[in-house]
Image (cartoon, rainbow, N blue to C red):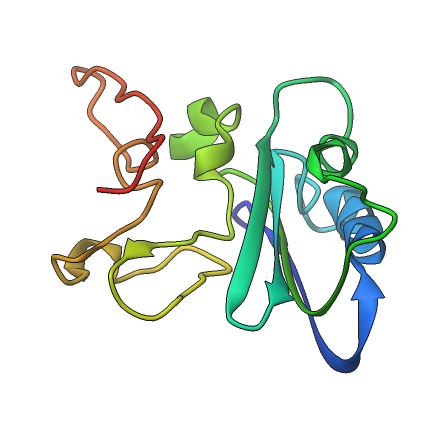
Length: 163
């Protein structure tokens, strides 16, 4: 049996596209499922990062908190969604593995991640295997909440600011 998988969408082009077009693709990815797969690709949250202006990425993410599609909730989070265009868009639909299933309600645990750091802008479209080896001036806004934990450890509160 294949493990839980996520869906990733990326667009980089000379002509900008509407961010809502990327969200439509994410909506399709939510339910994408091969006959051999036990679950669809997404459905446990979604996130999108898009270049708003030169070197300024906007990051919008939602967890799975309602019966509606995460794509629907993501679109609701955008200001004036019908007018936002970008030449660079990264999108992610989440399918949580069993050890993270209790984190699907938290938008902070949905990719893409945007590290809080004092250096150049960096975005991560998916989990970073070297997250625990980041320099001291780097932290992910998800670092405290989304790590696997022992059942004896209390759940950390979602991060609201960068350290």
